[in-house]
Structures are given as C-alpha cells and as structure tokens.
Image 1 (tube, rainbow, N blue to C red):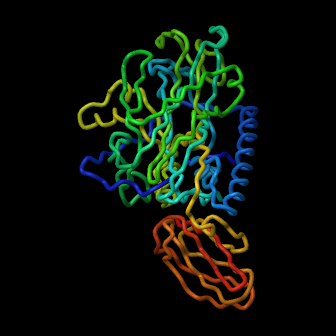
Image 2 (spheres, rainbow, N blue to C red):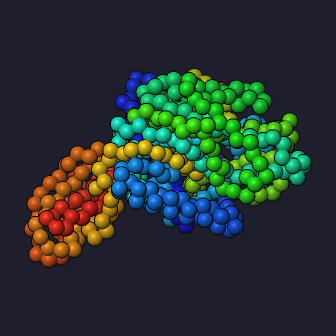
Image 3 (spheres, rainbow, N blue to C red):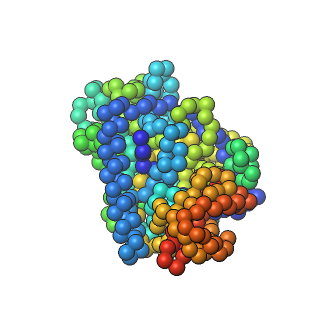
Length: 442
C-alpha cells in the first residue's frame, strides 16, 4: 500500500553545547483493521490527486499549492519496509494502557518539524521551495483516531489541541539547538547529524502536561465531535493562513485535552478499538515492520543525503516529569525526535517557488538505472543527436557537464560514485530533444 507522508536546510553547525539524543523508545502500537486501512487508502488516493493537480499548476505559473508531508518521502522510498499503526496518547502520562499487558502510556503528545525546502519532495514528484522562498500554511491535517468510551455518556467536550510555531533554526527560544546523532549512531553515518525539535517546558501536575516555549506560537483548539470517530485525519484550519518567512522552519505539536474529570491511575486505555474507561485518542504513524529493525527511515539527511530538518517527534512521560538529571537533563527540554516513526501529519502549503521547473519536471523518456544506487549508472537516451549531459545538485549548482554525441538510441555508462549521497537532477539537453531524470545516490 502507498501511504502519504514528511525535509529542509542543512543542519546547524555543531556547537560546544551539542548533545546526543537517545535512541527511540519502543512504543506499544496496534495495526489498522482492514476497514480502517481501506478508509485511509481512499484519503491517500485523494491526496495524490490533489498533488497531481498542484504539479500541473506549478508548471504554468510556479505557484505551489499542495498538501505536503515528509512521511510521503519515506513511504515511497521504503514502502515495503514500513507499516501504518496507531498508538494511544493521553492527557496524563500516568494513564494505564492495555496492549495485552497493562503498562503506562509512553507519550502524551506528538508532532513534526516541517521543512518544505527539502529536495526529498522532488523524489515524490512534488514541487518544493528554495530556502529564500517564504510560504504560508493554510491547513494542518493530523492523523489520529478518536474513540468515545461506553462508560462516558456521549461527547464530553474533548479537544484536540495543535500548537503551531515557526522560527529560524538558530533560534534557541523556539528550537532545542545543538542536539543530534553523533557519527556512527547508524550504519553508514560518517558525520554528526543535528536535528531540530521544539523547546518544551513540562509540568508534573495532573492535567497540566506543559507547553511549547516558542514565543510566537499559535494555539489551535479543535472541539471533537461524533463524526471524528469515523475519520483518519482531522483537519485544522487556522483563523488566517500562517505566514512563514523565508528560511524559517514550521512545526506543530498535538495534545489531547479531556473534557471530563479523570483518575489516570485507575482508568484504562484498551487496545484494538475496544472501549476504554475514558474517551481517548491514538496517533497514526508509519514505522518499521519489525521491532528489531533499527534503520532510521525518517532521518532524511542520512537516508537520502538531502539537506533536511523535517522530523517527527514524541513527548515521553519522563520528559514531562523531568526524570532526566545531571548531564542528561537537557532531555527534559524538548519533544524527542524519532527516526523510526513518521507521524501522519500533512500541511497544505501555498507560495511561489523559485526552484526551476526542470528540477521538478521528470521526463520518463530518460531511463537511469540502477536508481537509487551507488552512482555507477547506465543512461538510456531514446534518440540520437548531440547532447549536453549535466548533473545538478540539490542547491542548483552544476557539478558535472560534458558533450555527448549519439547515433540513435544508446545506453552510456557513467560513474558518479565519488559524489556525496543525495538527490541530483540529471539532464540530457539536445537541440530538439531534452530529457531529465532524478538520480539518487545512496
């Protein structure tokens, strides 16, 4: 199944205060039922159609107006290794969940750092933005399941709260600057990779989980209703489009605010759609097929070699209760980034992109294989002639150029394996026949 998914600028320069983030915790999750998966697929098919229409608009006037998600990028690249699941989150981290064995709920919030300048979007055939392009966020789509319990009569005033924020990646008031994965955390990782997660202040008081620190944050509250129990995405529309200046990243963080009194030590969330003691919500996300698979599918700078600061994040209970001490105390100050989970959060983005059309328009007449690969490729050109063969990197810089003369359809070999991992645009430009293809070096 193709699911829809979430990448931007190069990471911050490592500072003396740089810290290493912990590996992801295992979170209890449940698979979607066949009916739930069918419903989700319908929504994703509609999203794919919307994106196709966006590409058509962009080719005529460079206007980007589309639903975007970093999860799409990972899903298309690694769909056979990923699955869609859901896991409960709660207004209080002392809640008990029953996934076969009763245990505390791991998280009480989740979100995403969004970067529409990621060249990863080119991999899925979508327009994207240059770092100098401003953009607006018109709608936020949050992938969640909402269920009402049998013991709570009807709707009780529950709320899905989405906090939206933005800021330059060096703004330490918005982001926890200086955390990341040190070299060799993952196979093939030769250098440190910093990640961008929002600052957060926890609160141990029951019913007061804490808040995002960004000074210019926007708190969006969505009153949950009966029809929300039958959907996969809840659409959050700000009072006015959120203007994001050029160079800034955008983020959201989602929490569940119960409209009723509760005792987290005695009330239980149950698995597999069973009725719990309280109304509850679960977040939808993509994750690895096996719990023993530690591949960082959602760490784009490593997996794709692409400049990107888009990453999903989760607020664990020990973050809220300030459980970390000493040299690990910095972990209390941010929602933890995830490399094995991609939250189903989408953004409708609008703006004028200054990325050249040729970098988004893919001509399938130019076949390149293996692709993705190590850079040693065969290039099949469908017609003879004199061509200019060039390779352009993710910043638009031409890094390879040569003249090629062909008699009829030909296959030519080239070795680009010395280049850095990443996404490139390969062009064969002739007098009457110009062709383009994306080249992914892994």
